[in-house]
Image (tube, rainbow, N blue to C red; front, side, top):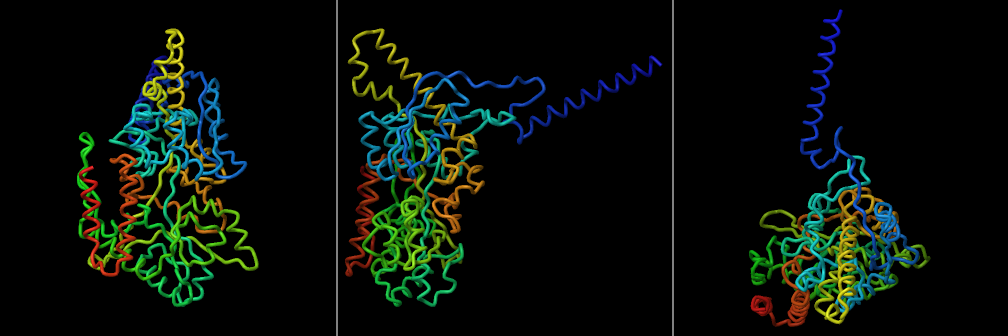
Length: 497
């Protein structure tokens, strides 16, 4: 009897040991290696943070609660941090004054930034390098306390556009990609079928549609801002060409390849087949009101444009003299030689950066102006503590729950975090019942902050303006047969910058 009990006890002990080994092995596989779970692993506790930070951003509409919900989620985890919210009334107003506010130090400790601005302020050391802090952030809202890594969480282009010289300076939150607004009433006056195109339509299709719209009485069927890199860049890359050679981040050297025959061919297609033919209106989307849209068949726009038109656009459609409309994906470019369609989509990535107030104070002699050593030490400690809290606050957008909160429960913004984007809640704003899925297209072909990822803001803006002006001059000069000379001038200027 005793032997049987001992034998049974031994078998049970072996079984427990086997289960324990299996459990341990399961935790070591690729799926679970970032999860902090286990029978003997203590539950992690968030570090204690104390202090006050200021969060600067913009509101999409009156009464928007997205920022408050994000702050509330963060404070639930770090209750001793006080957050003051500094909201500008609109997207356009916020970004119009952002550069000035960074330079004069009146921006918040954490602020919303456009990816195109990262290089400028990373170079000046006015935004904090988040790289080391962003690897292995613990998601305390998860039962498994999963470790988070930005390269795995965000759309690849969102992550890449948040880097400068391979370092992370922005936690991506939202993105703003280029799409097509279609005036269905205007299109119905032609024999175009179907009126709403398939997702794989091309610029060759738009060219045919523009001609038919012009024949139907629409003087200038298309509105687009070809000064914008998201537009001319798409045409420049239409055959798969790149605009630069290998980049040396360490030497901060780059050689633009604007004279690449495929790049020139793409730009000439834009100029010859759209602008010279009179298809493109002498306006840009940002100049249009919702009621102006009735005059055009096709508008190349983005999510912020749709938000700006918002309720007025809905009211116009519902009015007796209103018009029906729909959204379509940004078209691709058909390549006859390869019988393929190439998609190059312009996207603006927006996220959270941390203001380096320590560097700002050094640059502007603020520390030097404090004569009392104790007060100086206190000020330096306060700034250091504020930066620590701000880094935690900015990177909290890596947590799914927080990403949903800051993009808004009603979808004020299109989330850059893949798990939040997949929830599709954001597709109902600012309009429901339309093909807002077009804003979800964000793949490896995106090139939003590409130029500014290796050039600072000033030369990047110069290139955009120079390209737009060159396209305009070429299009207006009927004697000019090739775009080569314009491209050569810009390329030489950039490469000797």
